[in-house]
Image (cartoon, rainbow, N blue to C red; front, side, top):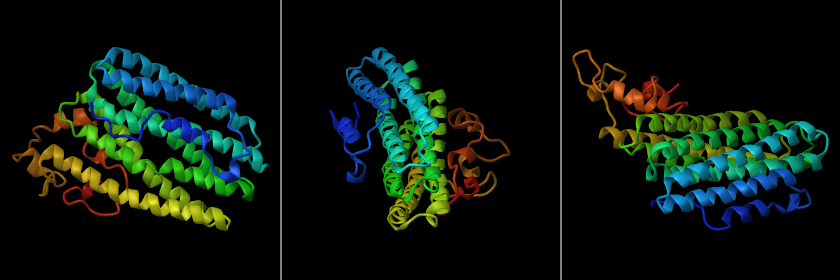
Length: 312
């Protein structure tokens, strides 16, 4: 089985324990942590079962995992609603540390499951694709909330929040690589490929949105937090360029080369001539009715030959 992620025994649990020194006195919500640790253990079991070709059992454990991650996210939402995190640095840091735990688990989910999707079949394969999508949405919502807090909380809490934003956004290009790698398998069922293409859109749009959000708050931050956010902006901008290359490679692998030409937005050479679009229905089955416009769902920093029409 192909498994090239950072996942190793105890690695995520160690990451959940470790925190920057400035925040060590601020505890993680015990309810959030309990659910997150349970989810981490379930993810390890999904990997183990998949390695042993026990797809049905892996699918059942995956449902347990998703329930536990939803539980952790629900507890985090409750913490956000009940804590006066905009008035005290301690409450803000406690919430942020809890958010880091849930976001880390969600990140690991997307990293790990994208390597497993082509190793299973049937309902389990579809379940893994849906879990990737759900985990990305969870992580992105957490990053959005933390970014919104940067200009609301006391200055003492801002550097730690900035550090957590950096930690949670760092794996963005790895996740896109995992998803495009899975999409490159032409044997994927069309429904699974469609779900993964939605996950790809979520992952790439998140990179674009993060740049815009952080640019918006950068000028309002004190020195230490501003320096961290500037580093995050540089990192995410680099991710955007790398993602462009990954998507180009995906087209190359699927179609035997980046198409050029005229007519159908530069895709005329791919689909043939004579006014029809043979093969388009198959591709739309894989990538949705918006294909090819929906496959590059962000404002690309460079032009891809033959695909400039797909930027927006």
